[in-house]
Amino acid sequence: MKTIVYRLTIFTALLMASLVAYADEVVVVVHPSNTLTEMSVDDVRKIYLGKKKYFPGGTKVTPGDQPKGTKSRKFFYGGIVRKKEAKLKSYWSRLIFTGKGTPPKIIGLDHVVKEWVASQPRGMGYIMRSEADDTVKILDLK
Amino acid sequence: MSRTRKYSIGPICVVAASLSLPLTTAMAGEIGDVQWHGYLTSAMLISSDGTYSGDVTDAGSGNDTRMGLNVSTQVDESLSFAAQIKAKGTNDFNLEVDWAFASYDVSENIILRFGKIKYPVGIYNGYVDVGYTYPWIRPPEVFYNQDRLGPNLIRVAYQGFGAEYKTFVGNTELGFHLFGGAVDVLVGRVNKLTGTKFSVNMEDEIRFEISAITGEMEIDGQLKNAGVKALVDGKRHTTYTAGLIVDLSHFVLSSEYASATVGSGSVKQLDMTSQYVMMGYRFGTYMPHITWEKWDVDSGRGQKSIGIGLRKELTTNSALKFEVRKITPSTTANLSIPPGSNIPAPGTGYGLFSSDDVKDGKDVTLVGIAIEMVF
Image 1 (cartoon, chains in turn yellow, orange):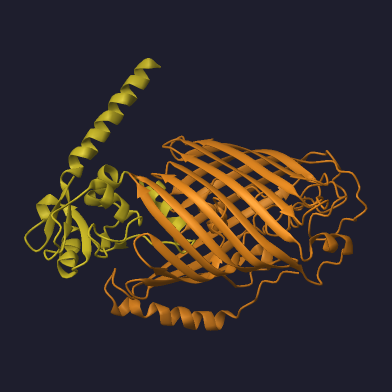
Image 2: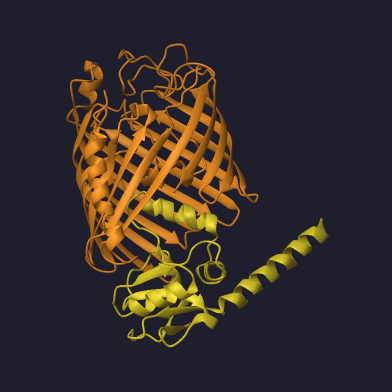
C-alpha cells in the first residue's frame, strides 16, 4: 500500500510539474494597442472564469477561448486557471442556467486566436509561445 | 392548480430565430453575439408505498424528466439579456418561461437585474432544474420544493429587481444581494417580497451564504381548506437560510439550514425548519454520496430521510445517477384541520406524502435513476 501511495504521489508531482512547465509555454496575448504589459495570474484566472469583466485599469475585456483538446487549452486551464474540464463544465453550467454568465467564446486554434486578438482592441487570448508574433502583445504574468 | 402560464411554441420559435440572426453577422465575443445552451434530464423514480411529493407512486413516475433551452446576448457594453424556457413532466411538458431578465453592469462590482429572476437564495435554487450541476436526482425536497408552502424555498422565479455587489479580498469573493418584487406560488401569491443574501466564495472550493426573505401571503380560491387559509392569508412569511458547500478535488460536502415562520403571535402551526447534509467522494468519474434530511413543522408534521446515491460522469457533458432513500414521515397531533389541501396542513402526519396509506412513522423507500446532460 505504501508503495502505491508513494508512486501516486510521485506521479502527481510529475504531472503538476509538467503542467506548470508547459503553462510557461502558453502565453496570454492582447491587442498591440493595449497599454498593459503585465497581469497577475489571478486576474487572468478571474477573467476566464467570468469573475472579472475588465482589464486592470478599467477597460472591458473580451476573452477568447480554444476548443477542448488543444494543447494550449490543456496547459492554460491546467496550469493557470487550475480547473479540470468536468469541473469547468459544472462551474459554467451553474452560471449559464441562472443567467449570470457565459463562458468565453470558442475562437479556434492558436493561429485563429492570434488573428482574432490582433483584430480586437479589447480581446484577450492564449496561445503557445511559438505561435506568437508582433501582431499581438504578450503579457508578462506575475 | 398550477399558475404556470402556457405558451405556444410558435412565437417563441420566431423570437428564437430572430435572436439567432446576429450569429451570422457578429464576430464571436462582440456585442450582439448570441449564445445558446440547454439541459436535459431523463429520470424515473418509484416509491415502495404511498404517493410522494404529489407524483411518485409504486407505479413509478417519469415526471422528473425535464429539458430547457437558454439564450443570452450582450446588448451593449453594460447591458445584457438572458432567458430560459423549459418543459417538465410535472407540468405535462407545457412550455414555460423559466426566467427572463436584463442585467446592467453599473461597474465592475455592481450589477442590477430586472425582469423574472430566479431566487438568489439557496445554494442550488438558481439551477435547481439542471440536474447535471448537483449529485442528486432531486435536490433535498425538504428545502427545494415549490409545491408546498412550507419547505422554505420556492423554486420558481420572482418578478422584480435585484442588485448585486461583489468584491474580492485576495482570491475570496464576497457578494451582497438585495432583491424585491412578487412571486406566484401554487396556492396564490407572495406580495411585497424583499430579500437579502451575503455570500463568501473561496476559489469555488468553499462557498458559504446566509439569507433572509420576507413577503406577504395572498391565498387564492384554489385553497379550499378554510382553516389553513385563515392561518396563511394576509400573513407575513419569513425565511432565514444558511448554506455551505465544500468542493475539493475529491471530497464534497453540502449542507443547508432554513427556518420559516408564517404570521406572528400564537399562530405557530406552520412554522418550520429544514436541514440537510450531503457528503460525497469522487473516485475518478464515480461519486458515491450520502444525504441526511430533516423537516419539522411546529404542528408536528415533517419527515426525515437518509439516502445514498452514485453519480457517474459519462462525458464532460453528461452523467448517470442512481439513488435509494429511506423516508420516515413523522407523527403529529391532530389539530382538526383535515389533509387534502396542497399545503402542509397541521394534523396530517405523513411528511410530503399525500395519501392516507402512509402512516406516522412508517418507512418508505424511494429508488431513482436518471441521465443528465448539458449542451
